[in-house]
Image (cartoon, rainbow over all chains, first blue to last red; front, side, top):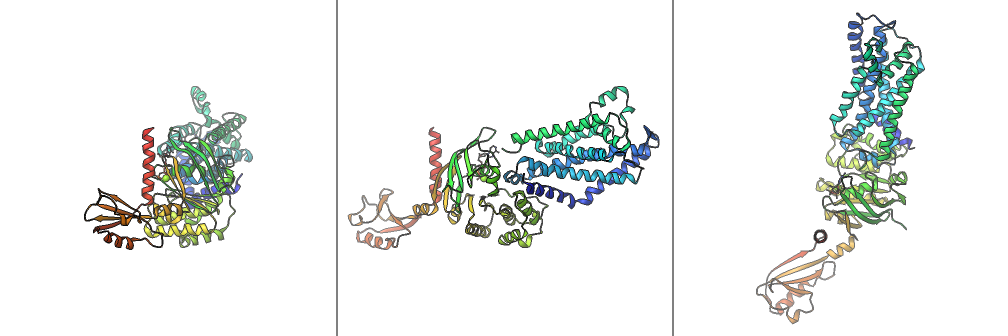
Length: 253
Length: 314
Ligand SMILES: Nc1ncnc2c1ncn2[C@@H]1O[C@H](COP(=O)(O)OP(=O)(O)OP(=O)(O)O)[C@@H](O)[C@H]1O
Ligand SMILES: [Mg+2]
């Protein structure tokens, strides 16, 4: 392992984040506040409680997941797509590093950024609602795993994309709908019976449910199932990345 | 001793089925400068990319410093620095962060003193904290060189280092290459300009349509090119070269209207003055004279054309 190289990539990617630090922080903070105003205040005045939790607090885990997932994907996909687009990827390809190191650098940086933003949202949320976290280790584990696996997914998208439209396509057409329909702002039990069944095919449901469990100790699906789901999803991403690495798909001519 | 870069029968067929390298073999000695000359699409960049790990060879073997570039890629690539043909740089980074990144990427320990010195050598020191998008094209090229040298490589590839560079900067580039050679770096560069290959290289290789047509010492090639022709237009055509002129290397052309004298520019005496005397002694009057030199360009074009003809015949 060329740790110096991993660190160089990680540092380089994080520097971009630090340079635009204010933007990186302000936008999630503002959008979180808006969600609280719209969902928490407007809708929350009609729904006081979900499963005994105030609606404002109830949406916090979903909100964090929503942002963290989209941020991890967009950061990682852009991070590897940009060098491909402007041609600086030649340097990664000619360096004495294997693909594993490239992934660790880029995915590590994207996961760190989204983790940071997730924490920022959590802090912002405490200004609006009373929050308790019942199980800190589980909460952090879910957060870190989600950041990592979605950064991996983003990395795959960035490798696959051959133009900017494609870069937006998967997040827009697949991820955002799945996340919105994944119970970010409601409990699955609030859906009609039929749609509850359909929802169970949405992998994001398991992530949000598990994450919510770590806050409130209650969940749509058993927490073990959530854990298995996120582990399975991570494994799938790792396998795909490993295959890309083996075949040089879309990387080396 | 084996060369610093050993290329044996390297082949590259791109995914689309196009064969860009058709079995290239070449050995490059440590500390030497080799210029690869060839027309657009000859395969120069492909050859370099295949050595550096940007594309995978589909046949043959390549070793750098004794390490196979595929099997032992870490050891091989640590020895190599690459300056690509295109000016590809992250626009918002500074010169400093770019070279520091490159050094780290190649696994070299942080060494700010070395990088400072490198930037000074390339006259980039006062631009250290400038954003790359603010630099001129020539400066960007030098940043690419600085990035390639950031980990102190033993072998440097320069893919068309002077493309789109003005005369002054081109001289600059020649100086930079000469200085690098003094430090013992092996340099492989590509160019379309013959005078550039002459000015910089110890050996010149000519590549066309994926094949290496010739590799020769620049001095040998130059000696071959050192021969000049003096074309003498005669006032009246003659049938044969007069007896009295048999000492000279002369031949007749244009139905006896032009007398051609071949001489060596490197020789102490060209014999031109004596020849003029002998001509008037022989009773020939001169209408006009002209000298021509067979350039590398001619040899080069000749080689490429021959190749094409053979290709057509096949
Ligand atoms: N990624 C690729 N896929 C398919 N064909 C390619 C690829 N890269 C290069 N080629 C083809 O291989 C041939 C050699 O290209 P290469 O870039 O090596 O030429 P070159 O000698 O560097 O030319 P130039 O002087 O224009 O830079 C060309 O016909 C080119 O079209
Ligand atoms: Mg080229």
